[in-house]
Structure formats: structure tokens, C-alpha cells
Amino acid sequence: MLFEIAVVWTWLVFIVEVAAFSDALNFKEKIIRISKKFNYTYTPFASVIIAFKGIDPGLEENLAAILKQDYPKKEYIFVLDNFKDPTYKILKKFKSKTVKIAIARSVKNCPGKLAALITGSKMANGEVLVFGDSDIRPGKNWLSELVRPLKDSSVGAVTAYRWYFPTDKNFASHLRSAWSSIGYWMMLGKHTFVWGGSFGLTRKNFDKFKITERWKTAIADDVEISRACKKFGCKIQFVPTAVVGTFENCTWSQLKEFSNRQTWLSKLGSKKGARIGLFIYSTLNFMFLTGVLFLAAGFWKPYLLTPGLVIVLLQLLAPVRAYLKQKALEFAVPHYKPYFRQNRLRSLVTEFLVRPLGNYNLIKAKYMKGIEWRGRKYSADI
Image 1: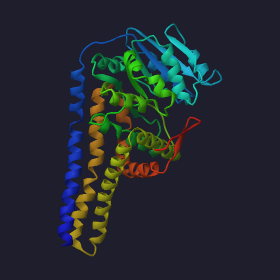
Image 2: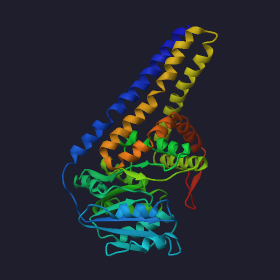
Image 3: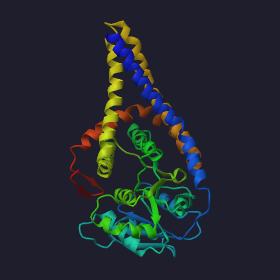
Image 4: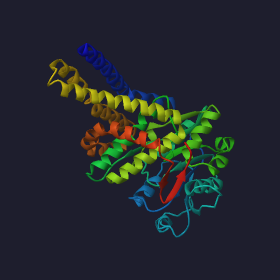
């Protein structure tokens, strides 16, 4: 009886893992399909708005890349909390006719970043508003690729996503990269969301969605854009050819803080999604655990060795899936290919820890009342 149960369970694990693998095989095809759908020119006047607080690693290189966009008509609005921020000295080097530097206006009960984005949006003259984080280092076609789908009136907002490229050999940095890349499964699936590090929408939709009013009482800029698109029945379009790199490292404690914070923010955006994620991760980790238990029990009941071995070996598909994802993104953003290759081995090895870490984050998020980010505390009853 136990043998029959083990065999049935092994088949279930096999089906789940192969289904996930087949989805990874379609990554590149999905990217090609999106690229063909928006294969036209659309370059309205664009305002790029970025909030700054503190100096990110490689900030000058990030700024140089952000300003080096192959796009005809654009303006940049960089917003700070105050002129005492050390970033100001760096931003002044890049000031020009198309680069404005402003101080965020105080908005009651509105966190620093959102107050900065509201300030920037009020100064903007663009037909399209693009918002980015200060730690991104995009390619020269980032802006044109991101804006293009907005020509489609059914698209409420466009979004890119990031890939962390560590510059050290610390496994924590590489695990953060692998952990963060989970978002691509959602972006290329049926649960696309707006990512706050790089997104855009037309001025018309910004006003129609009443984003300024939404942000005045919000915690996360991207969550409100996603909610607005859902409310108005508009599509959120992920643009894989606008994916941006972030060249940063982290310690184990920073990884813990980062993954817990991002999970809590995801839960803020969708409680249902968090519950589904917890179920999926718990199930996947339980599957692996049963494989280990079958192997251990095989010393007393040899017929459990084969099911246990099959389940454990199926976990080797994790780095293969990650490799396919990386190759698909190399096709979408070829200028990052050297960095993908440089970090390949460590990033693939850390894939084995993504599921346990994700499970821990989702459990932790159930009991978190808020987060702290860049010196500010945020709380919400979720």
C-alpha cells in the first residue's frame, strides 16, 4: 500500500515539475510574440520622473545610462527630499536644458517617494509619463521600447522589470537575483503587475485614473497603478525588451530584509495572490521534502528509494528552467548578455534555495505590520 501511494505521489510531482519546465520552454516564444505585437514607431514627448534618496551604488553610471536614451523628444525630472541629500552634488553634474532637479513638495500623510513622484508629475510636460528608480541602469533603447505599446488605447500602463547583476561573488547577492527573477513568471503569464522601478502611462490615463489622489494616501506607487488599470478595465503590458539591470550586491541580512519587504508589498497589492503563492510554495517544498524522506526511509524499505530518487532528481530542473529564462532575456535585451554569462554559474546554483526562501517570506509576511525602506517606515493592515 505504501509503495502504491509513493508511486502515485511521484507521478504527481513529475507532472507538476514538467508543467513548470514546459512553461520555461515557452519563455522566448512569449517574448517574440510581444515584440511582434508592438512592432511600430511611437515616440510622443516623454517625461522621465525619478525620485532620489541617498546614493545608490554606481549612481553616476546609472544616471549616464538613463540620460543616454535613443529617443527624440524627452525631459528628465529628478526629485529629491531636500538639497542636503548627498545625491544632489552628483545630480548637478548632469543638469541641462532637458534635466530638471526639484525638491519634493510636502504632501500630508504621503511618504517621501510618492510625494516626489507627485511633484515630478506636476512639473512634467510630456504626453507620456515614465517613472523609474534611481538604481536602474537601462540600455539606450529602454525609453523607446517601454513607451511604444502605449499607442494601443487598450493599454493602461506599461511596465518593465529588473534583473540584478551582482558584482561580487557573495552567494547572498546571487540568491537575491534568482529570487527577484520569480517575477518574470507572472509578467509573462496572466498575472502581470506594474513594477515601480520602471513603468509608464499616458498623461491622459494618469489624469483619468486620478493617480495623484491615489498616491496621496498610498504606500506603493506601482500597486496603485495596477489597481487603477484593473478598475478601468485596462491592460498592463509587460515589455521584455525594456528590462533593466541593477548592478548591486547585498549581504545575507540585506537579502532577508529585501525579500521580506518585497513580499509584504506584493501582499499589499494582492492578498489573494499571496495566499495562492503560499499554497504553491508550501506544496512544492513539501514535494521535495517527501523525496528526501522517501530516500531516508529507503534504508528500511528499499522500494521507496526509486520514488525518492526521482523526486529529488526532478529538482535539477530548477537551474535548467532558470537557464532558459536567462537565454530568453538575453534575446530580449542583448546588451546585458555579458553580465548574464558572467554570473551564470552562481545564479543557477542559487535556484535551489529560491523556493524555501519564498516560502519563508510568505509566512513571514502574514505577521508583518509594515516595512522600513530608505529610512522611512510604512504600515498597513493587510
